[in-house]
Image 1 (tube, rainbow, N blue to C red):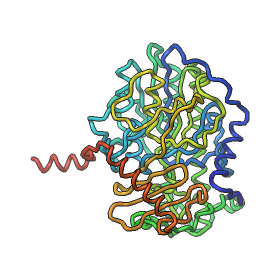
Image 2 (image 1 turned 30 degrees about the vertical axis):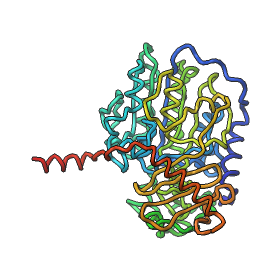
Image 3 (image 1 turned 120 degrees about the vertical axis):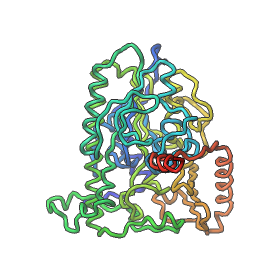
Image 4 (image 1 turned 135 degrees about the horizontal axis):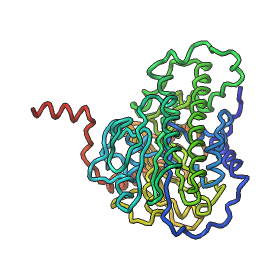
Length: 458
């Protein structure tokens, strides 16, 4: 049994520093003369600290770790919404979910908001997509702005290997006339959802393989922590597992992470074999994290770090600093679109909320944001500053304030402590001002909603 329970910051930062120890940040060369390619790898439900390169002792992820060694990893990286479709809409547009119209799962991006493929295609890029989309279809054969490499569908343990092999073939055989944007969207470790929610019998009450008993991960330090929370958040507590079941659930989750890592390795190997690695910006992230027993949560939906903090690793040999761990800058899924446009040398679409990560990747001084924001449950919103996290839900009297430096595992809600009244007021103001700047659109209908509306009209 693992007994490694450091503070969250120590847990992640120590591992990331170790992963990058073999490389030095060194100087970064001038921008390449050719337009760079982009390989954008997206996992589903992968938490920031679920990687061996970020200090997790219970998982082995050598391929993501080599990306960490070869590039920059951000330890304060946040999803815009710990739900699949809303978060993905932000990754591909640089806008918040209320601005893309994707406020819940299975909705398309509003036609007024261009996605990454549509925008880069205008500048001569070959834009190719392979894997899960979820905006709205899971594995559609057509989508705006991209040529789709079809892979069928299914759970991650079946479809991800097809995704990685299809991307491998593309990287090795693609026409070389134009620069490319290849999106490789993996499902794992999302399959853990089916273990904990849909098919609860998959987490047996008695360990089916006794020889694994000494290999099961330890429970997290905040496993039983239940800070005061808005009703919609508090209702998500998962009460059905024993400690042994929780530990087996974690064991399975980490094996699913390792499945994704193997597929990532196949694609990185193919990129290197193609001769394009030195002119390809690789961006690796996830749409959101997973509860993993923190606060007795499974799956996503929470403003706690287990759901909203995700990996963000960017690499390009000779163009981006190597082996650099950024533990201070607050970054967001909103930043991917801005970063891609910056490296492609094209103006970004209007009204982007993200920042280009390029100055940070090249270790140049730049004025940075004061906070990041995440939506949740449509009516909830989280704002994270350097020291604090503030959460509020519409029409709910319970707010949350966590001191993320003193309490990184989010065990003590400070919102009723009079000492923090000014801090809460300041965060409310920041959030109000942020919300006032957003350009909301009518939520896009899901295909089912659109079909019902069509039937009503006829």
